[in-house]
Length: 349
Image (tube, rainbow, N blue to C red; front, side):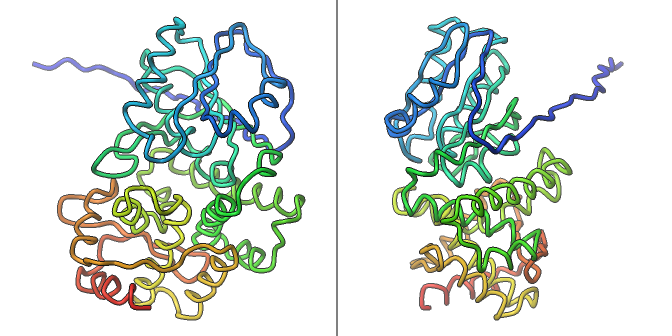
């Protein structure tokens, strides 16, 4: 005996990404802006001059990747319960990727899902983290292992916020831009090699191209069942580095930069990328003072940590490898001995 539950339906999760100076916006509901002390000190007054709501609250969580955890999520949820938020209420993620991921995750689980808007304030979050609906938090086993796909209602990118961004944070965002160019857009990569990102018009165009690239991939594969996994180029290695260094030594984009170099070395050994192409990528990362080396103390331990990656299975590890510049391969056919040879020689360079 069986009973069938028919749930076939089409849900339109489309939304607009606006790259421009923030326009005044009013929400006819309860709204909570989730941010951290640093961003609040720099930019909250500016945001409050643009955003009004039926009721408006500020939720401030500690700043830093190490606070992207259950305690911070509970803090957000408790505030929503205290202020009697309902399913028509709205959250605004106002900060970098950590704030965006946690706010989106809290929105996805509060009363089984409420709306949220992304207002990203770092280059990394503007070009990558705010687009695509990935939300989550870290735990002792690794990065973003708990989360949900929950698309925002809108993404509002105001380049003004980048005027106070530290050089390291800017470079971390560039790493994510390079990631998308290497895997999906050779012409974009060539443009980046000589682009002057200190020119605000050039920078705005680069943000647009990066967002368009990611949006195109997400539109094809929202839940990362196929091609969207290619956007994790550099992340498989990078997440292990973040895990080993307890999220304290490197910014996310910096770890991804090192991860891309490791992925490139693997691709070279597999005949997918030439040494000259790998050097071009490394040179572009170096241009923005991004780290491209890392001391791997125990290759076997590093390798075993790969299995905590969300793309991996019990017996195989999925690697995202460049095919030249402008192409990408998602594969679980990398021999362990080959990967270990890359890890063994990497720290010696």
